[in-house]
Image (cartoon, rainbow, N blue to C red; front, side, top):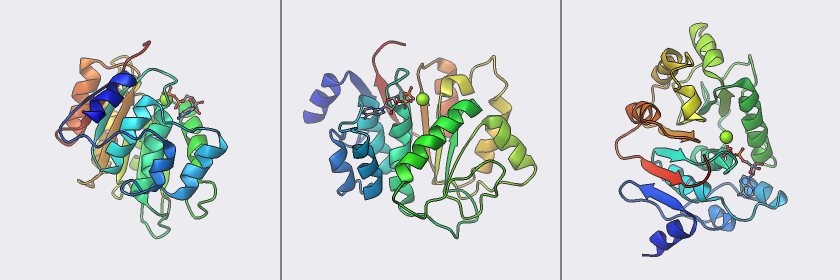
Length: 234
Ligand code: ADP
Ligand code: MG
């Protein structure tokens, strides 16, 4: 089958039922059924990104189809855009009336969170009314928030953030979030509980997969996520 050839060519292993077709070129993102906002794709082109990386090929259509995604791909394989591009498609348009953020990205460190924010700002250029939460601001009328578990937990405790509207929840560097040497575990549970929308799309990206990461991911996802594994150096 066509899909299997694409997977083989890009050293992709994909598991789950009813897998959406992989995207081989960014230009097909703007067309149905994916309907990624045009400014997002134009911004990719200004950076001379023409073809998706393997993890992007499969994660983007899966997330846009509202499937949960568990993706393992090496460092440097383009995981950031693999969740930011579909995020814009899922949210469709900025919503300045929303009582809370609609997309939440959890990153293990502030340094990484800032990098992800920078990528998000890059993609939203030209799509004027999109709003990103910046530190300490209220989340009312904002679309996207990128933060660390520690910061989120303290915002939740102080009731400074409303996560009940979150439609897409992304865990970046899942291996670091659920490492037993870090103490993120109870904090991550608090955040998940605050993201109370049962129809939210959940994604976890990681450079390495362990039983622990996988078990924790499965415990916060809907049954039958799309699992994507990109072979390569680890
Ligand atoms: P990871 O999170 O998997 O370690 P990043 O998302 O940080 O990787 O991406 C690594 C680099 O690859 C970044 O500089 C990014 O701009 C670049 N990149 C991402 N996607 C593409 C693409 N489709 N084509 C070319 N470069 C890309
Ligand atoms: Mg990354």
